[in-house]
Structure formats: structure tokens, C-alpha cells
Amino acid sequence: MKENWRLYNKSYGEVQRSLRIPPVLAKILVDRMNEAEIPKFLDKEGTLTDPLCMKDMDRAVAMILNHVQEGHRIEVIGDYDVDGMSASAILGRVLQRLGASVRVRIPDRVEDGYGIRPYMVEACAQEDVSLILTCDNGIREFAAAHRAKELGIALIITDHHEIERLDGQDHLPEADCVVNPHRADDEYPFPMLCGAGVAYQLARALCQQAGIPESPEWIGYAALGTVCDVMPLLGENRKLVYQGLRQWNQNPPQAIRALMKVGGLEKLDVYTFGFVIGPMINSGGRLEQQQKYIEILLEEDPIRAEKMATRLYELNRLRQKMTEEGIEAGLREVERAKQDRVFVIHLPDLHESLAGLVAGRIKEKYQQPVFVLTGRGKNVKGSGRSIPAYNMFAHMNQVSECFIRYGGHPMAAGLSMMEEQIPRLRSLLNEQCGLTPEDFVPVVHIDMEMPLRYADENMADLLETLEPYGTGNPKPLFAKRGVKMRRILWMGRQKKAMRILVWDDGAEYECVSFRTQDLAQRMEEGYGKGIWHRLDQGEVLSEGVLVDICYQVGWNWYRGNKKLQRIITNIRCSFGNP
Image (cartoon, rainbow, N blue to C red; front, side, top):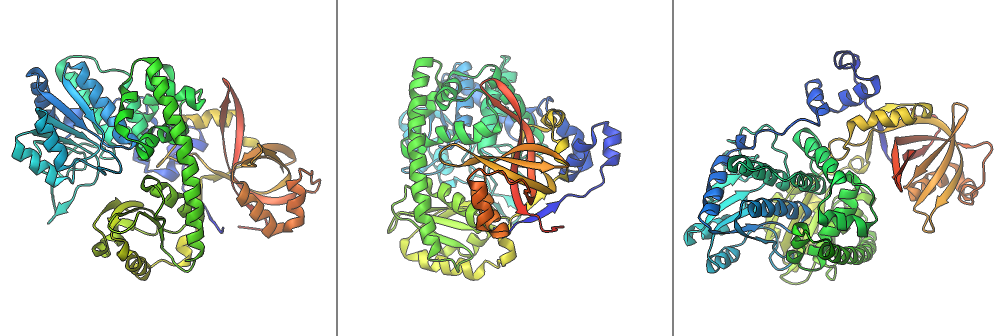
């Protein structure tokens, strides 16, 4: 697939001098943010904003403490994803510490769907619940809020999702308190917290007002939710994730210790949160009922925690197999509709919880917007994943008559609809998309050109200053043109990774790559199948073949030891490319 390689090119000398930081760090930071933001970015040890600065936080704290003091029953209603589970764990634990009579409810992904529902409120009334506390949901659940008001149940909504606005004003549910940093009247300085981040700030405020210490493990749950909800790792999110990872690597709670054991993890980082721990937790809600797996995040007995972790590991393996089967079916459907610019794929037998995963993988392959729909008749549900050039939610608004229910943001969405509307949806989305072939070409943003001799242990240590990496703060990407690729050595039986030996400025360097299919395609297109066959067989090419590479440098941890690693992320044949 064609790529546009773009090199950042901003002046960084003044920042380097004023902050007295190495030029590589200055160059990377200036390319990514305004100069005024850099000192705050580097201060990842700093404290968070006082939680009472958030609108309605003081009222929420006073109401919760009053219900605890009166011995009233409290119900926390969360969400089935990792952010919602993490937020629920934080609020469940802080309320337990305060001595509350509390129960945590996680809605079923299939039976309940997302958010608090009126029948959940009615169930609370039957069980003498006096206060409902939502987390990671509720900001658009007007019917449920109204029902709580009718039944005389106090309702506190804590959420982080965008707020509906009517005539320029926030349209808020009829709750007693609404804690959401996206409120127009909220002066909280960092609105990009996830649901667990908001819950953590509420827990801090409760402990401050009650005069008790917060648990050091809670910030780890906030970090987990932040990473798994793909929030930008800037501002307070950067502090949450950095400090949360440090805390859990020193002393993880029993649940995380058990998940690390079954997942074969030695160390936690953004990657293991997003691709190992998070998917295991998510699998409970995808293939079974997430309600029973909230217990693992609240569990303190190591034997029970490991038993639940083992089941989540097994479910995640099954989920992976089902996802791969769904991707294969989805790709077959794409082949039948290659002329479309927005793919609308109907896989009626796919488990609805996997639609978003399948859509994401197909989007990555084709770099085109994708909707994956499941189910039949009146019960078609779906998820969409998009590209930067296509605001998915805005385009869904233009065809809202096709849906029973929908929601989302520019890069992802969820929906329900009638099966009979699918052809119309496909037609309208493609007619109105406005996409051009250039929109489907991914852009590779390169921080700087750098010879491989500088990608050494000192550079790896230096770049650790910018961690944690993730959304909004990607790992620095370097480029070098005209290196000689001399040999590849496959890693593993499935050939999903390779070691690559290259020459640059008269010295040999070992790199690794995980984009093996891309490499094979580029080599065949540029130098022919003969050269690629020789490389594939492990032959050493004394003359080498010229390639341009994009690469990352850092430390790889394995069995307690760390080793310098250069990872080639992108490659192209070098024919005098600019």
C-alpha cells in the first residue's frame, strides 16, 4: 500500500536553550506541541488538579457522604468495557472503604447495551436503593434519569462522553449531580479524562472530605482505563498513566497480579495494558456476562483472582479465534464491493461484540471507513471505524433515518437498525462521503532523519524521558534513506516477525520488523520476486538492496533483562526518494 512519508520540520533551538534539554528531545517536542505546553508535558511526576474544581464535584461528594452516613443502599452502574470496569472498581472500592452498603452493576453488552436504562432504575427501587452512581455512562440517558426522579432515587452521573447541546446550551439529564469535565460551565482545565479518570478524581475528593487516605492502587485503575479507552496521553492523562504504571509495577493488586501471571507478563506498560490486560478483561463482557468479572477487579483473595483470570485468558483466546474468522468473512465481503469508498459489511452470524474489532482490522488493511453489521431482521447492530479524512459520526447524522439508535465520534461509532435499511445505508453513505483516492493513503509522520549509529543505548535512555507513549504521544519515529538490506531471519514458525540485517555508513545493524507482509510486498514490487526469494530463504546478499526505512529505538525487556532494539515500522525501495 502506498504511504506518504512526511518529515516534521520546525525550529527547536530556542526550546533547547531555554529548557536545557538535548536537541533530539527538543526537536520531537516542538514538532508535537506548542512551546508553552512542553514544561507541563515533562512534569509527569506532578499532582492532578484539585478534584473539587470540577463542576458539581462538591455537591456529589456531600450527597454520597450523607447517604453513607445514613446507611442507605448505593448502586454503582458502570459499563462493560475496560474503562467502565476500571471506573466501577475505583468507586466500588472507595465506597467500601467509607463503609457504604454498595453494589456494583455492570450492564450486559448484548441484553442491556450501553448505559443506564429505566428498568435498571426500577430494579433499584424494588431493592430499596437510595442513590445511583453512574460511571463512564449516563450523560445522554434522559429516560433513565427522569425515571429516577419519578421514583425518588437520588442520581449522580459521572461520565466523560461528549454532551448533547441544544441551542448552544448543554442538554443534561435530570440528575441531582452531573460530573463531566466536558460541561460548558466547567472550568476544570483538562476535559480529556476517561471515565476511570473522572471516577478517580471523585474517589480522591471523597477521601479528602472524609479525612481518610486514598488507596495507592486506585491510580492504576485510572491508568488502565485511560489507555484502553484510547485517550490522549497528554496533560493529566500522562500523569495518571505514568504514575499508575509505576505503582502497579511495584505492587499490583491481586486481580492484576493474576492477569499478569496467566498472560505471561513480567512488566506492565502501555502496550500490555492495551493489548494483553485490557483484551482479557474485555473478553468477559464480549462472550459472557461482564457482571461476574467485575469481581476480579474487587477480589483480594489470590486463589479466586487467579481462577477468574484463567477463565478470562481462555475467553480471550476464544475471542481471538472468533475475531480472525470474522475478519476472513469480512474480507470476502470487501472483495465483492471494492468499488465502495465506505464499506458496509453485513455478517449476520458474527457475534455482535466482535463487530468493532473486525471493523478496525479491515479499516487498517484498506485505510477506508468500515461499518460491520451483525444480526438479522429488526435486530441488526453494528460498529464503525474510520480514517482521519472521514468524520464518521457527522456522516451518520446525515443519514440518521436509517438507524433505530446510533452514537459515536469522528473515528468510531455504534448503531442499531433494521436489516431492510442496509442497502439504503450503503448507497447513501457512499453517495455523500466526498472521499478521494488520496484520502485513503496513510500518512507516516517522521520526527527526524537519523543515522542508525545514533540509535544506541544512550538514545534509548534519553527517549524514556518522553514515556509513556500512546495516543497523542506516539513513540518517536526516525528515518534513514539508502541503507543496504543484506539478510532477513524469520522469527517463529508463523513468520510474523523477522530480524533484518542492514548496513549504514559502513557498519552493520540488526533490526526487527513485525510488518512482514508489507516488507515482502515492497521487495517484490521494487526488486522482483527473485531478490525476495533469496531474502526469504535467509541468503546473505553481499551487494545488499537499497531501502529507505522508518524505525523506532528503545529497550526490549525479556526475562528480567533489557536489550537495545531497533524496530523497522515502514520500508520502501530506495530509488532516489526525496
